[in-house]
Structure formats: structure tokens, C-alpha cells
Image (cartoon, rainbow, N blue to C red; front, side, top):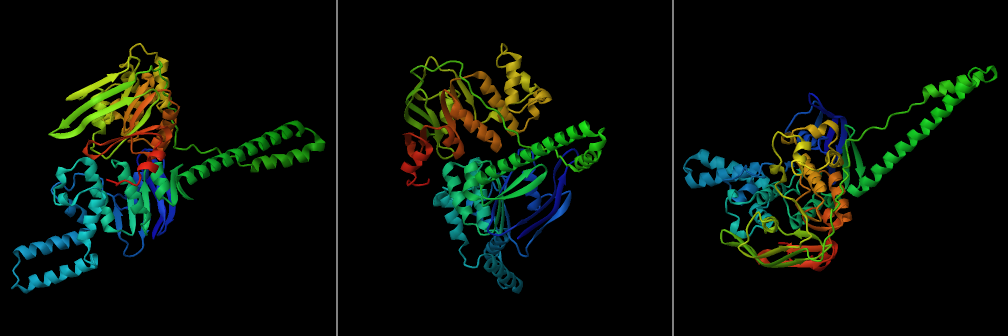
Length: 535
């Protein structure tokens, strides 16, 4: 359905990939993976026709309908929700809106008006043969958590995460033959991600998706496209299947190279020993020819790098950790948090979940007094030393300082080697530590914030969406670090693999100030509550 031939992309100072040849087949769902900066989004933009490659071509089967997830959440501010979704099929949208305008203001005594109406009816019939578009849009919106009563409201009234849901509905409404999705799970809550998984499993055409959500890739993908070494390798199976296969390939290449190195050493040793011996001269010459033919290739350096995250508390936690009683906070007469009571105990590792906008980040700001509670009490234990990763971490890292200087400002007494070691663990080595913090990407800023938290040595970590902007390797390392961490955790995340890695207590904020406090893993939590309503 999609044929990619000799595709290459190179900028002035960087080659992303070269001579890519792929055939993408209907019914297959491809996860496009690779390190940050490897060129995944660039490749998807080339496939969708938004940018031109340096060389090569992309060909689609005739009459292929292509759907691309929009990235501009503010492109439809003056559209109603239903019109924004309808816009996913631009041809149908234009025809229906022109029809509406003609019926409102048209001169039906004019033959050209009636002729145009007939043409528009044909377009509508071609794009919506069952005349079910309004019902399909209504169902999509309701499945994404938008009640029927708000379908006519304007997009400008929505939060950023809800606007992103509309962009998803838009591309799903089109029902494309080829679907390109770049980070579709960003800004989505856990239940919306689950809904999206089920929708994509039913997609019958080609799907190519970029995601840093391992659970999502494992659930949806039938094939993996691995962008590394400036090439793309295709693997059958999901992300876990790729992970096992890729490790085996690296191991086999390493064993093969080591075998050849040993053979080279033995040949060189024989030649050096017997080349001057007349009786062995012929054998030495034969060995020399073997040595010339021996092709020992260097192992290619992967663009992937694994950070080494380690959180070590400086002091142990006492019996009292954090006690919250009758906490109350509201925005614009809307009760975000009401009569909240929580007692957090030593060794509690909490996953704080709930739909976007329900009050999770507000809760974090309240316990750190970034917001002032209207009622109630927040009591930290005397032994607690907390570290906080705020949701807006990228906005807090700015200025002309180097990475090293930015970290040193938080503790002037900290040993220089300790600061540089923390940066090195997060893949900032050598000259990279002297870069200006303002020049960092979103993922680099998040890695810098994790360096800061490692240096602080807190015994209570509060992390609000720490995986945003991180690649899969960094998220896996973070999950391992939280699992091994000997302290308390409250973490807000929509990454289910991360939650599964560390959480032993699940707290869910639900509508109408209902709070579910569950002692156990996320998998155990789902077994008890998965039958409940998804929204």
C-alpha cells in the first residue's frame, strides 16, 4: 500500500537516514522507534508529504486516503467541537458548509444554484454514503468523554489536553487507508489511551505510529520499524519482541567479531613465528592470504544511549511521612479538591491517576504550598526531605548558565565531581555540560531536572509527568530507579509500564471529588476496578 524507495534525509551538518527501502502493507501496524533526534518525526513528515526528502520517493496505491494526526491544538479555536471533528474529512466539510450557506441565502430560481446543490449532494454521498457522519461524530466525542450537551461549544473553551482529543477524533473520523500518528498518547489520560488502543487495533489499513509508551506499542503494533545506525530495520512483533530480537542481534554481532579477532590474532602469531622458517614458508604465506581476506568490521555505534538513574536518600524516613486532613481547594467556584483525607506511610510508592484536569497537579502544588489550601491541614514528617519534579519543568529551566552552573546554584557546597557525575548519568558528558540551559530540548531539560533530583538525595519524591519528552530508554531507566528507590514516591504519569514498575499504592481522583485509595499494584487495581465506567 505504501512503497518507500531509496529514501534519504540529510541536513547541512547531520545525516538522519539513507537509502531506506520499505513496503508498508495493509493490515499491519508499525511502531516507529529510535532515539530522540534520530529522525522519527522527520520520516513521518516525509511519508505524509509535509516535507521533501533529500532523495528517494514515497508512492501510495491509487486513491489511498491518508490521515495524519494534527499537532496544532489551536488551529480550530472558533470551530464547534463537532465541526472540528468533521473537518477531518475536508472534502465533506467544505461540501456540507457550502450546502448550508446555499440553503440559507441561495436563489433557488437560479439554475446554477440548483446545479451546484446537486454537485454538492454527490460529494456528500461519495464521502458519507450512509449519511451517518453526524452520528459517527457524536459517538466519537462521547467515547472521548465529551457529553452531548457540549458538542456545540467552541474549541477555544477546551483545555489543551481536551483539544488534543479533538485532533484524535478528527483523524479517526476520516477512516483513512493509511494512518500516521506522532505521539498520539501525549496529553491523554490512561482511560483515553486504552480507548485509542482498541480503536487502532480495529484499523484495517496501514498504521505507522511514534510513541514512547511501551504498553501502547505492545498492545497495538504488529511490526516495529527501528530507526538506528541511519537505517531502518523492520521486525515482526511488538516492542517487547523487538527488544529481545535486537539484543540477540547485538550479541551475535559481538560474538562474531570476537571470533574473527581471535582468528586474526592466531594468524598473525603463526606468520610472525614461521615466516622466516623455510619449511613453514608456504604455510605462512597461506596464512597471510587468509589474513588479508579476513574482514573485521567495527561494531556500529547505536544512536541509543541508556541513562543511569539512581536515587539515593541521604537519610531514612521515620514513622510519620505525610498526613492530609479535610483538604479543600476550588477554582472559580468549582471544587477541585474537597474534604480530602490521606495518610501516607513509610515505603508507600503511589501512582496518582485520574483524567486530565481532575486536580492531580493541583494536589502536588498544594502539598508544596505553591497553592494555598482554603481549608484543611498538610503535615509533613520531621524526617522528610522531599524532591519535586513539577509538570512545567521545561519552563523553569532557562537562562545563560551552563548545565553545571545551573545545578551548582542549588547547592554551592556540593562537590564538583558529584555534580558532573550526576550530569554524566543523564548522558551529559564532557563539553555537553557546558552548554547553555536555554538551548536544551524538552527531553534534555527533563534529564537535567532528574540530575537535580539525584543530587538532592531526598527521601520523598513527588514527580508530575516526568516521562514527558523522554525517550523509551530514559523511561525504562526511570522505572528501574523508582523500583529500587528506598523512599516514598508520589508520581503522576500516564505511562502504564512505568506505573507497573514501581507502584504499590494507587490513588485515583474521580468526578464529584470521589477518591479511590487502593493498596496494591496497578494490575491488581485494574482487576478490581476495570469494570467501572471508562469516564
